[in-house]
Length: 206
Image 1 (cartoon, rainbow, N blue to C red):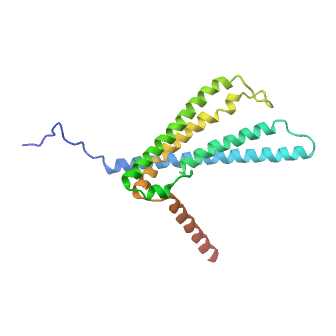
Image 2: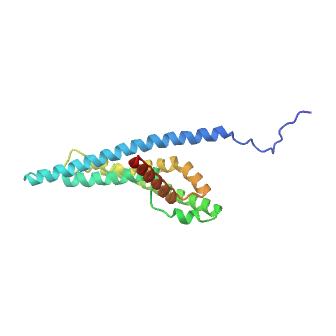
Image 3: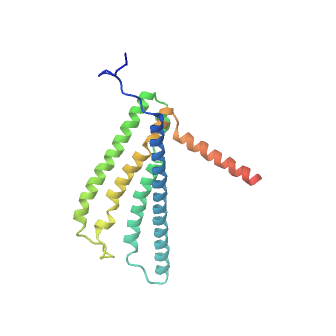
C-alpha cells in the first residue's frame, strides 16, 4: 500500500543548493555594495581634500572662500556617516568579539541576535526621525550658499541610516556563520595581515 503524508508530518528539509545559492546572492550583493560605498567615500574624501587645499591656497593669497567652513563641515559629516555604513558592511566597528566567542554557543547566539536587533532598531528610529526633520529643514538654507536648502545637506541622516541597515542585513549571514563556528574576527584579521606580510616578504626576496 503506498505511503501517504499525514497531517503532522515534518516538512522536507531545504535542498543544500538553495542555501548555497542564497549565500552566493548575498556575497554578490555585498561585493557590489562594498565597491559602490568605497568609490563614493573615496570621492567624498578627495573632494574634501581638494576643498581644504583650495581654501588654504586662496587664504594665503588674501582671497578666502566664504563657503569653505560650512561646506567642509558638511562634507566631513557625510564622510563619517557613509564611512560608518562601509564599516558596518565589513563588520569593522568596535565590539567585544573575543568575549562573545569565548561564551557558549547558546549565549553567543543570543548576544548576536540581541546586538543586531539593537543596532538595526536604533538606525531605523534615527532614519525615521531624520526623514521627518527634512520637512522642517526644507525651509532653511545654507548661510554661505543660499541656493542649497538644508534638507539636501541633512539628507545624509535618513539615507545613511537606511544604508547602515542594508549593510547589516547583507553581512548578517556570513557574520552568523562565523559566530556559530566560533571564529574571532579580530584573530582572523590578524592572521590575514600576517599572511599578506609573509607574501610581500616572499615577493621582495624573489
